[in-house]
Image (tube, rainbow, N blue to C red):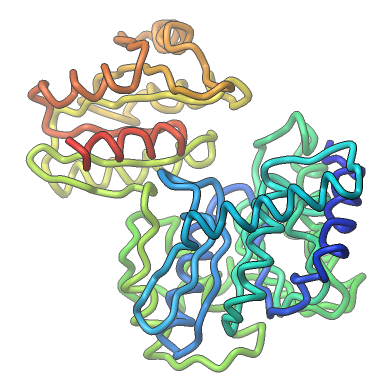
Length: 399
């Protein structure tokens, strides 16, 4: 479960730092899938409406500084890495000063981000929760202008609980008294928990799943039917917060919003698609999106390179990818990721074999990349982990 000791330490650290989290207006987003896309869409709409926007997202794709950005008048600026290092060192000094028995990288990232936003003073800051909600490091903000919930599913079960009920209760912990709540989930059990928690806290509750048809008229830069939910959630959250935006700002913001590493087509002939789907719900959305894309582009032969973390439901993801009729004309390759929690590629290849599909495996992402570059596939699709997506994206653009 989330660590209450760490959460208390985070509050102590912020107190010593002068509570920088009180110096900006925050939009708080929790969920399992879709947080990053909703955050990007909200930032894009707000920027089009003339506001400056701070953006705190995780994990990063390639650069640590991607996590902390300020968008203003078309300029999207990551925090300078040297300044990020300075702020993180300042946070570490405070942790040492209070003799904290526990700290985490995410605690340090979050506190440093707060310091940066307190310095730069954007009109609004869009904060994406990490893994949790109730005891998430970002839940140290007291008065967000709106609390937003994207899709909630079975992920991070070791820390949040092994049922949807427990996970939703944890994530519902970001709801604050009187702060509007916006939810995109069509799942009745999840919706009821969020609605009941909102009512108990005197919050208005917006059910975005009932409003999707209102948003089919918009052109979205992000591909996939699931992005319609995210677009509706972003716009409805801004409205619920009482922020003044025009219809034009919503339309233009959604048309411009792009989230790197989420079904990102970085090349054609052959197509290279980078996708950070890392749990079964996200893989299901990927299958739907890719199947439609392959039909539209008449793609017959695809190499899917898959790698994931050990603590993910990798067997279920493999079952979905190899399910009858799901990914036609696709060959599979498993790959090692240079990360301590990464699943062994030979183990993954065994899962594909158990599902009745052949699977090549590589002991490094670099080897897999080289083989893919030399192949004659019409499409290379990389998925299973945001870390793999970032690594392969970096190889491609540096090649």
